[in-house]
Length: 157
Image (cartoon, rainbow, N blue to C red):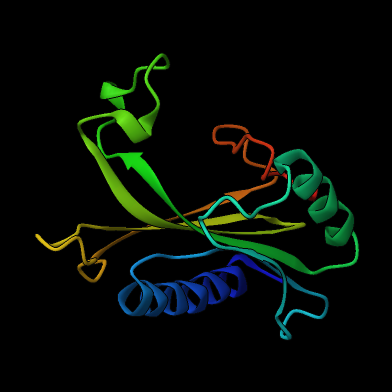
């Protein structure tokens, strides 16, 4: 497995998420696994209505399943800041006046993490406008200058 395979997975999942966003108005949180690199198995899917297990329990379950998987992917919709200089640790990003919505995809494997972000806006009726900006980044496990932190990251460390 190399980063181009992780990229292919991320682009495929992003297309599905973009279609779901346009059809449903939101992107449901999903965790997917591949045991052989091609078959995709959805393991944990939750809607943003709060019907998700405790995040620590979820992370522990994903870590356990990752042991027998080639890659683990997560798809979600979240708020982000375009300009990180505006970040205030005392103010949740969801309450920031300069926040934007985005689809986030991360695909993790033994070689590293491929991250994809597709930002979008909503029209006057709050219907999403098709995401048009996609940012991507591969972070190798051997990369000492970039890293990803958080309970839903580093499943292979």
